[in-house]
Length: 196
View 1: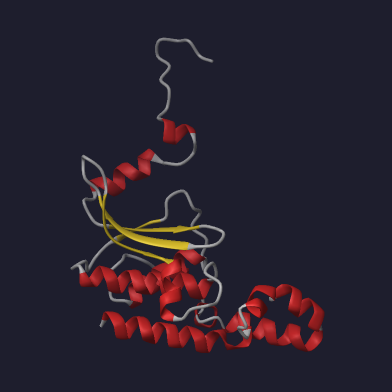
View 2: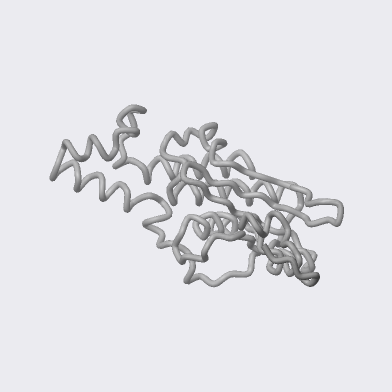
């Protein structure tokens, strides 16, 4: 380890690779509300956060677990669920008076068409102004789950055993993966009805 008098130990969260302080400083100095999108292997979380000297304040938040109360029994880690969480978060944010925000994706790489940008599309569709380019969003057939339904239909016709293995969680919950676009539309309508 360096022992020079000029050597400075980086902040703990920087050493752990959890925070990019150069980017965070720019976001905080902008003095705007941040739409923070975080995705894990199983869930998606969207928060609207205001930075303060004493610590950040969460003004509104939505988690993919909340979709179950809107009869979304499908996976909570795919593109349609990320869109629905963003849409739900955007409508909740409008209820508390938020109309504009900037996107904060943290240390995630900005991959076009990813779950992060599916959540952003949901936020934008809910009526929150977020600076963006339309080319980053996933295609509409991917947002509503048509691609999953098409894959499931083709797989079921070609290899029933592989279909049962691939969609075992859906089978346990007695959900037909071919009907995901219909479930998506119903869930979106229920969210709209509750928050409009």
